Amino acid sequence: MNNMGQPTSLRKDQQQALKQAGIRPAISGWLVLLGMALFFPIGFILLFIRCFKHWSKRYWHANDLRLAGHGFIFTGIWFILLFLIGDSGSVNPDPEGARSASMIVAFIFIIPALICYFVASGKNKLVQKDYMTYGKLASEKRVVALAELALFSQRREKEVREDMKYLSAIGYFPHHTWDPATLTLVGNSSFRPASETSQTSASSAQESAAAKAHTAGQGSAKTVDCPGCGAAVTLSVGEKKQCEFCGNVVSYS
View 1 (cartoon, helix red, strand yellow):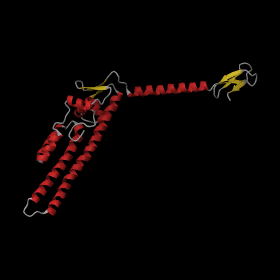
View 2 (view 1 turned 90 degrees about the horizontal axis):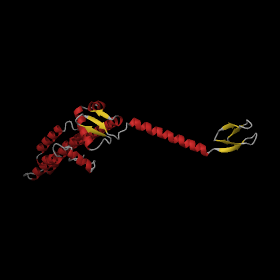
View 3 (view 1 turned 30 degrees about the vertical axis):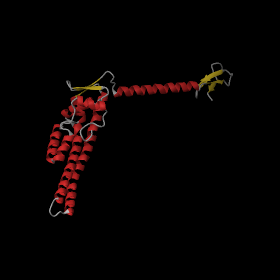
View 4 (view 1 turned 180 degrees about the horizontal axis):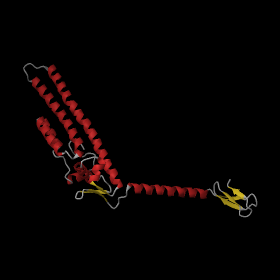
């Protein structure tokens, strides 16, 4: 997601699918930033409303935190400009004092902005980890219930339901479809459990290795003359065989 609330790491068809599914920010990030630029309390009020509406929609949380960081930066710039303009228009301007005040304001607002960016990064990693957890569970079962997904990921069912809506819209599950009516993740006809796929792959690898060994063994076979009677005996690598004519043991060499 970019800072304005629109997906940037998704393909165009996925972005379109999100719009069709009604998945969009409660309040546009541009509108929030515009409110902060005009009068910062308005922007923060809009941001608060947006975050409240996104409470269970975890795919927006990191983006909302980054937007809050931008809000602190905008507010700091707003105050710095206010100090500088006020000083330049005063009867006895104090450039040094204005610069000092600007540095203090910048420090006050940059710190929370950096904290917001840092927490946003952690939130994003946590959400992606949960998505991988959902994928792992789905790879093992054809039908996965909402309660099972919530238990497996240790998340509230309301949060998981929103996650499924989002992931289903972007096609995160290649062989499953989210059914909102039954609240289950259902595998389609092409689904094969990961354990079954692994067993099939292992069996194929074993058969291939055995076939190669058999072919190699056949390719190394040769005819050896019996040391007792001179009869021709066909042997594989390392094989020993008793001559059927004189009884002597013939070895591959």
